[in-house]
Image (cartoon, rainbow, N blue to C red; front, side):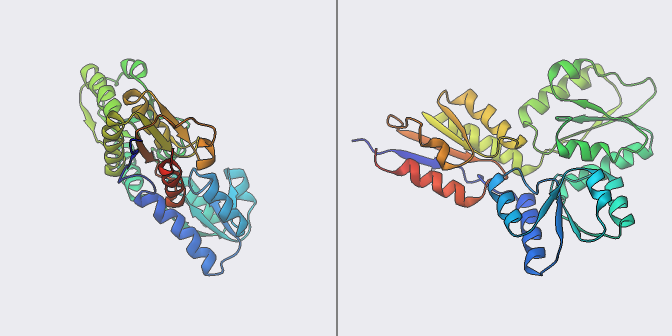
Amino acid sequence: MEERTVTTARTAGFCFGVKRAVDKVYEQIEQGKTPIYTYGPIIHNEEVVGDLESKGVRVIHSEEELKQLKEGTIVLRSHGVSEHIYDLIRERGLKCVDATCPFVIKIHQIVKKAAENDDEIIIIGNEDHPEVRGIRGWCKKVTPMIVADLDEAEKIVISEGKKACLVSQTTFNYNYFKEIVEIIIKNCYNISVVNTICSATEERQTEARQIARQADTMIVIGGKTSSNTQKLYEICRKECKNCYYIQTVEDLYHSDLRNAKNVGITAGASTPNKIIEEVQKYVRREF
């Protein structure tokens, strides 16, 4: 029987920002800090969030919940938050552990400066994503324009005599970002474009595309609410017809992989190595 080839992306799994954020929470646990809260799930992975909850870490989901706290440590996740959340934490006398990804902090600084200059601001990304909501919160009195697709890009208009600053959600599809930017700069003048898609995202998407082109079966691992994993799946599905989007190895148990000869594996930035290794072992078993 022909041997099955399994290729796992070198870039699969935790990116720098996610690993840093998760490590910071576990550091607080090891130091015996209590109570510990994360502002939103620390990452989009139920396994990791569940383990932290078993160790006493609670997730708060809104400003209203934050306002109810009288003591404790708040860990800000890698997605970042609005500027006024920092103010609220200080006002409540809570300790803040900032695990915002440095790439995201850079975007906050860019839009804050643009807003201070009274420039218009364009954010390419999903308006419901926590990272984009956080970026909006650094635009001060300027109301940013959020663009998620080509149709929305066509509608962008910059006020006469105004400058505009364009940034992107760090996990946005790089090729699609370029298409959107091409439309916007064709219709608008005096615009400064800053590619804020993080290098790890670009590398992950490029490698996933290359592996999927060579595979007859592609497996993408990550949480269903993970934006960067969803983008990976979209990219891989275009290159490989037989593409699976799974959260854990259990999701493969009822899949028919008997005829898979060349399997590619990639994973989103919030997927622990343990889950990737379990999937690798499963697909390498005899068939």
